[in-house]
Image (cartoon, rainbow, N blue to C red; front, top):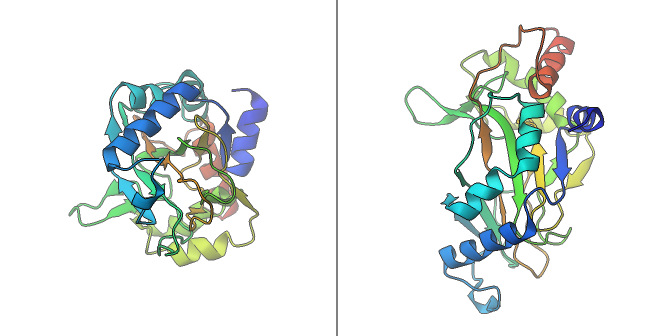
Length: 255
């Protein structure tokens, strides 16, 4: 990771790391997912659902993908050495198939981070407690017709001021979903397209959305979070890029 890439991440809220996972590892992961769901890429007649969700997958291939050297370098540069938790598995997987039915899951949002005290819901707070990054792993070819994740470029700068009024306790992403969508509405949209092994390393506050599949090839990808090993103190003078952006966004909001 050089200064130009870090500046790009800070500005746009994500980096596309092409070939971050060796292609043969990504292909093996896809084969394991096909086996897990009991379907075949050669038999479209079995693709009867628009989305199949797999909670998580472990094993050598997925552990190798999660800890590919290019990703470890990015995590250290953006979150900080020793400040993130190594993954031994990957999840979740929203596997999307060509289908006339459009699933009702395409709203603009950010990801939640930690359970509420009573465990009834998941919350997020203004400093992104618990979550350091969002990762989008591509395990298939994804064109603009294959339901790529939509990304609002730079939207991570809009989110901290929306969440800040909820304080340290935070709130459910559904509580402020409409406000997050409005705050980021003017941002340009990019598509998470690419090839098996490409990974989008995203700021935890990047606003994104799914979309229906209008192509012909199933889209296999994963969207795990990167857990923090050390919580951020936004009062520190020396912060890594993920938290530096949050601090700057809050300062411009008058915090």
